[in-house]
Length: 278
Length: 243
Image 1 (spheres, rainbow over the protein chains, first blue to last red):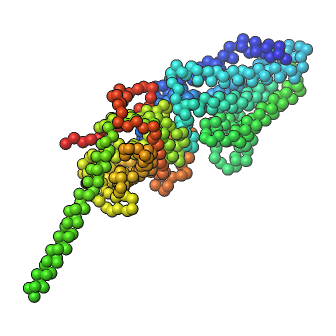
Image 2 (cartoon, rainbow over the protein chains, first blue to last red):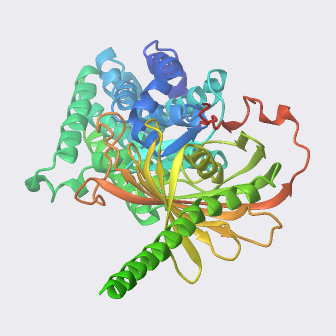
Image 3 (cartoon, rainbow over the protein chains, first blue to last red):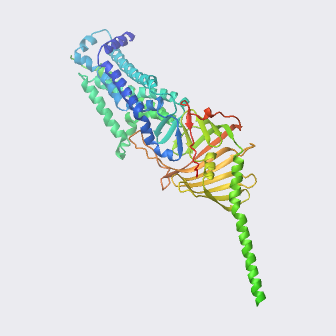
């Protein structure tokens, strides 16, 4: 299995499109950091202007943690797209390149083969998220100092600088799990396609549709919202509440792990019963 | 008849005299109380202390921030803290002193077991308050409570707690105020709940500042009041009017 995974990784990183995700994250983060560096203070002053009627506001809230929090919001759409591009190509790409039959003739079970590809997809997803962490919290130090963090979520929450880093690590960890769900979905579609574009477009369409349903305040959608994985994708924000709602966090993680498992098992079933003709 | 008229006139004059005497003797009492308070405050030439600031507003969650406060007469003031700090504009003892140094009329209202109650009306058209109520301790002649109505910032109620210091420096200050629920555009970050507003769209809030580790009338170099980029700094500009 280790050999299979290593081979899949080698194949993955020999393809140019693999690096699109890292390049896109680099650009997204740099653009946000530059924007916040130039205009962030004005934006924050505008948002909390009325506090200055009563308080003197002292201290710099435009710091690495506040900016990284803004960057984390890219987990809504930007990162899922980058994840789906690669995960959606891992199986369907083989069909598109005509290498499936060659692959299947090897003395390796379809289960192992698919599992190796699946692990590759998820490790790649983790690498993307870790790269996001690196760009936000490490490279960001070139632009911003450390400091207290402000989060505008139902209330104005200001976190002491010593109380922030662990929240970010937990939020990124949660974000990684949520991106594994997206990756798993794209991978599932990939097992049933013969070209890469279909799974990517399909998974993005599902993501956007479910996101709309999740955020639409219409009563008829309420019964199905708990079953949509998009309901939990932004659960990383829960780590920036005070006090922490551990019950909601653990419920969300459990449901996402359930989705990951279901997507994997469905992909495995499809692949094992797939009639490969190219 | 003449004797009756004469007696009536004398009684009237006597009553009038008593009334005037009371008025004349009552009128300066407010000013003398304030003068005594200011005189005692002037005994403090400088001080430094540790301060913790606890903000209690229903739509703001901020941990208790700690810092240091420096004061040097007549008007040098400096607050140092690490990180972000919300310091109430009203509620520092110095803001009360500045208010009393501006042209005003003080009116003695009443007294209870503990305090004299005065009303302060500003005489300057540029004053940032409309009227203030002062509760001055009857025995110790120090300000226990202040209620300020200002044009721009609504009402502030300040309560001062004193310890065993040799000078009239409060060891705790509580500031109560109304604050408008801020309207942050949803699309910028996320939703803001605003379900605790009263019908005028205001929430109640308070800030408690607790001082400790005082060093009074010691030497504080002027450099201490200069800007330091690594700290949060509050500068209180002197608002004394010069005639």
